[in-house]
Image (cartoon, rainbow, N blue to C red; front, side):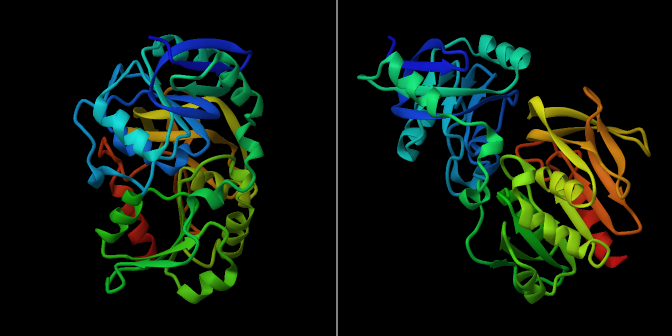
Length: 348
């Protein structure tokens, strides 16, 4: 039964089955993760994107809220070979269009060959190919979402673990995953979650021991205020960053970021530490990377597959950033020690 259409850049139409009705548009990307669909779907880094699951069956262990990384589904639409009723019902409740019964292998191959593309989806009993094409026509590139941080960040400062005896962390929330906050709290840190456009005065009010730039969606160049905060406090405070946070730090300190062809999204990305030659498996979700770290940051870890920077450090300034997600939800847990390293920055 065809009651959904997917229009891909170049106006190619793919027929599908509607699992959650509606029309939507966004950047078409894929993840290779075979578990963790709840974590992926609630990851704020997928804002303004359409997420294709390469694993053929999504939903085989249900939907549990305790696994969520935020309070809502962030991809604008979902594509899969087959979605279970649990996931389809969840996406319907969230108002996120979803389709299945299409060849996701072909879509993943096309994204790998052509790069992330603009896409439109129309799903439901009365939709037409023209509805999907109309969504495609309205779609814009990720770099044009200049205020995407406002869609994923807290609006007001929030304190977590207020009675903790560990360091005070000023977390600039550019779309932070909940497990980043949980990982810091597990180390008894007091986490001050600040808006993505927090001012110098808001940071000063926290009197932090460490400045932490979170993950988030879109082009790091659009997070100008976070970059200004990094530039202000680099050398004054220990500084950490994850994913988009690494890119923001690099841009602020004289480096340069660039858009990748199709990005890294999955739970099996190998990363090599250049100091120890140890390889760990990591969770990743990003479409931009650091092309040039500048002269203030040293590349300490690289992706085994394409040599892109996965870790940037400056021991003298007390800076440590990672392109992957050390909080490791849904896994693997090879890199959880990153948060211990952040606490050690403060102690040193």
